[in-house]
Image (cartoon, rainbow, N blue to C red; front, top):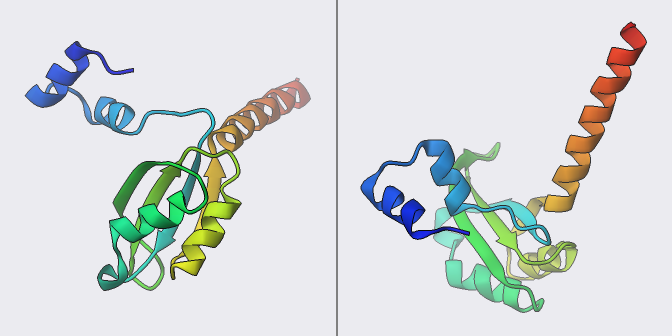
Length: 127
């Protein structure tokens, strides 16, 4: 949760890039992230929001990133308040967007835990 000190630091430009990223994109446990690319002329934030809300989900974040896909099209990142975003992905496809990545905060935690366990196993095997 952002307090007034953090808000004032943000306004004053006193936050590092990492701190800015953390306050602008906070971790939400029961959420998912989706990535899709599209031609700039085909992008409409209101259409993306409608596609998300059609699935009884809430849009927590929407950003046109600096990333490009293989065809050179901009990549759009979404954060939604559902753990399983497959329904949101289907809805986006109905609106003409094709998500190529779906991940959740729970997936990230599991991947991190698996990575830590793999490191422990490697350390054990080296002994």
